[in-house]
Amino acid sequence: MSGNPSAVAVLVTSTDLFVGKTFVASGLARALRERGYSVGVMKPIELGWSPDIDGEWPIDAERLRTAAGADDPVEDVVPYIFEDMVAPQVAADRLREPIELDRIVGALDRLRDRHDIVLVEGVGGLAVPLDDGINLANLARNCDMKVIVVARAHMGTLNLTYLTVNYARQCGLDVMGVIMNMFDSAVEDPTTSTNKRMIESMCDVPVWGVIPLQEDNDTIEKIVGQCSDCVDVDKFIEAVGLPPRVES
Image (cartoon, rainbow, N blue to C red; front, side):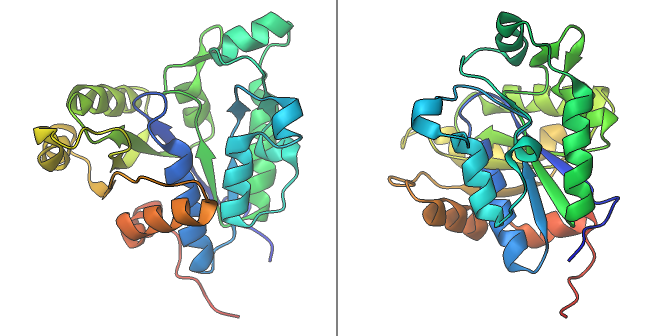
């Protein structure tokens, strides 16, 4: 099946590092695939790549590709791969190879041509620098991406989520919704039962799901299954504007 040349692209960003972007993006990719959509996935920049351990595909990009069932080439799914676990601009500067937005945009355009929707997992947060004066928010705006925010469920998330959502809006981005997770929430944290309601009130944005704390998420099936069970995928599809899938 050929994709729609103007297929929607959705940026999965977060309030912080290690919040669960890959988890959420993989879960959404599998859920959409199971509903009959052709799903492209992208990790424009991946950090902390070890060629001896990871091989050609760094770990996040490989998880995304597996969840989506996509066979797109590595250069389209992950245009930039760096070994250093530092800010993208720092990693690029160390190699004296500046990150070129045209390279990322070209890869995204090819994915949009092939698929009904492309899920783009960000690196860090929206303000993380890619080059002088250019960050992830600039990329998302230039590519007309819609945005979902992955946020922690525990104490402290209200401020971080509010700042992220409002910075996105100041940059001209459409924040469709928030997905929360409890990956590192303390069991006794009293705020986890109220943060969903507070985020919806403070940010004027729906929270599509809260992913509970899991003891074991070591397989892709467990990861995507848990996310699909906890996130309102139908509301996501409606917000994105995907047409009903027509069976052939």
